[in-house]
Image (cartoon, rainbow, N blue to C red; front, side):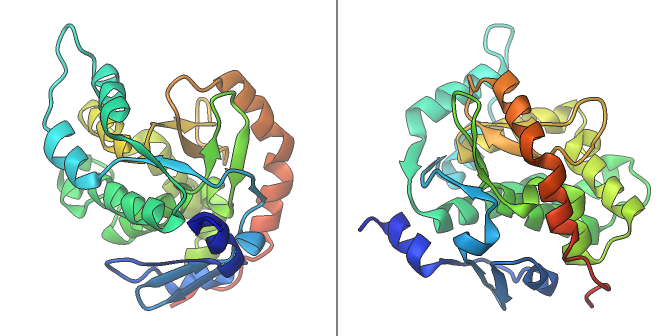
Length: 252
C-alpha cells in the first residue's frame, strides 16, 4: 500500500512549527492538538479524487528563485515555470504538502509587511487567519483539464474562516478581499508567483471583479480555466452552506 493510501486509511497528520487556532476543531474531520494538525479525509473533503500533488523544496525556492528578477526577455511567470520543470516532484504525502504550504504562506503573509501594506485595520491576527486557511487550501487540486479533483471547506474562504475564527460577515468578507488580492501590490504579486513554485503551480482565483467565496487553488500552468469555472459553479452554493452550518460563537 502506498504512503498516501495508508494516509487515507489512517488519516493525515502533520506536526507544524506552530499550533493552529483551536477553532479548526469546529470543522468536520479536522483536529488540532498543540502543533499537530490531523485531517480525516472522508470527513473533511467534499471531493477527494486525486492523491498526489506537485511540490518543490521551499528552501530552494526561497534561496534560488525569490531573488531572481524578471527581465524584458524573461517574465516572472516563465522563470517560475522553468523552475517548476527543473525542480518540482510529485508526492503522495499530504503532510509534505501542508508543511510546504505552511512555509509558503508564512512568507507571503508575514507581519513585517503590515507597515507598508497601506491597509487600515489589518492586524497580525488577520495574517494568522490567512496563513492557516491558505495552508489547508494547498490540499485542494485542479487537473490540467480543468476538473477540480480535491475540494475541502477552505476553498470557501469567508465561510471557513468565519466558522474557525468566529468572524462576522463583514470581517469574513474583508479577509476574503485580502486573500483575493488586496494584500498584494505588484511587487508582492511577483513574489507570490515565485513562492507558489513550491506548490507546483500558480494561485488561481475563481472570483472575478471582487471576492465572492469562489476561492482559489494552486493550479498547474496550462490548466483549462474555463472548465475550472464551470465545475466550480456546480457545487459552490451547496458546499458553502454546508461549511456555514458549523458556525458558532467565537472561540477564545
